[in-house]
Image (tube, rainbow, N blue to C red):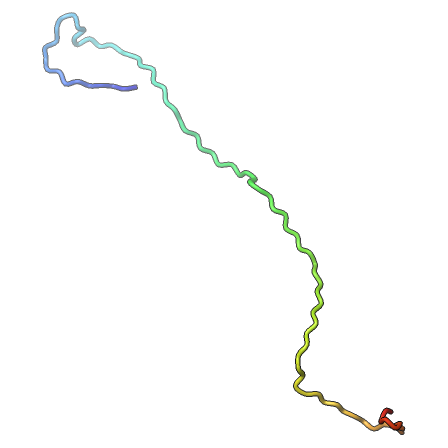
Length: 83
């Protein structure tokens, strides 16, 4: 609905309904905005984990070796030095 007002400066002419009280009903309509928030499922994710076993062979130089020999009993060595 649009209401326009004009500035007028003139005398009221007879027959225009001057100084008569009257009621005018103007039906107005309006709109209301409704805003709602809803929780929605957007996507689903499945996560699984597989057990993995791996074997690695590592070789490197050893700094030193210690050998402890205890003499217990009678040992006989052959010609090559084997017990």
